Length: 167
Ligand code: FES
View 1: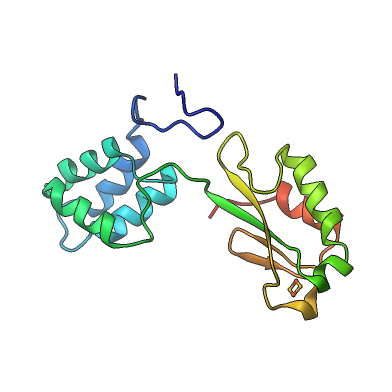
View 2: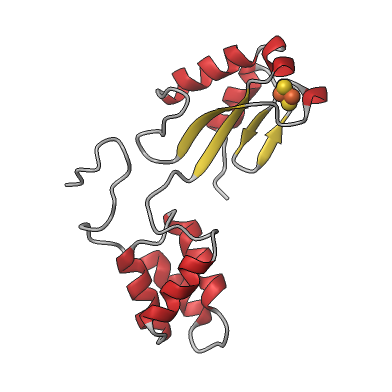
């Protein structure tokens, strides 16, 4: 049982299913210079690189654990702590406010049962209010994962959220 309260399980004391990692590792085993792409793919699958996962990768690729940790800690793209997988940023700058961004935010909060600044219980999304993102011409703006949605209505936002496809 994770005592990490409202955050996703820290994973440190939980049995990890290495199945998805093994599928990725099998594609790279025996090849040179594969550590970074392997880490990227495995992180994309699990959301972050827990200690058991990093140890598993080192063991399976026959690389020193210190070398794997060296790479993981060098690059800011890698996460060794649980984190949300996708961010929903709602622009709350003036232009977006005038075009109804508050209603969009409130509807997202209701839909996901969180408040701005919080993460969903499954750890999939975190909702953030942000200042002008420099796209006032297409206000109101919501950035969902890596996608910028401009001139968007409440209904379209909820639709995008419900049909969100994980990358
Ligand atoms: S106020 Fe939202 S993009 Fe500028």
